[in-house]
Image (cartoon, rainbow, N blue to C red):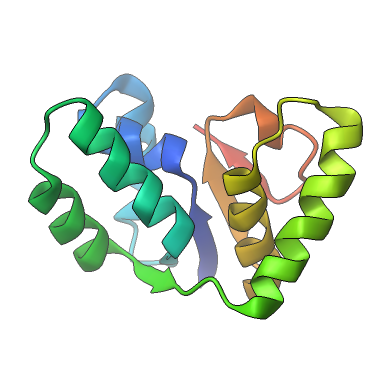
Length: 128
């Protein structure tokens, strides 16, 4: 079983049923994978749904059904801060929320499912 933390990018594509979303779907719905979401990403997805006038209940239901939310603990927060500090040296656009995804994956020893090029330097990234 492979543990995978799904980034906001991949979730949005999944919910939009785009071409990349269909690739994400194959991984997310594969029973050989245990799917996780950072609670920071959960918030980001809800915001995106609201900004695009979509029903947040679809996101909430889907995320709860398909994944296990990982609470942003103090340990993950500290790790996220360290990752953000280091990644900003290489990529000035690297976002704090991406740091929480990376920290969550590191804590779980998991892969990261994404389409976000900000993860290009992460060996554990799986790109859709």
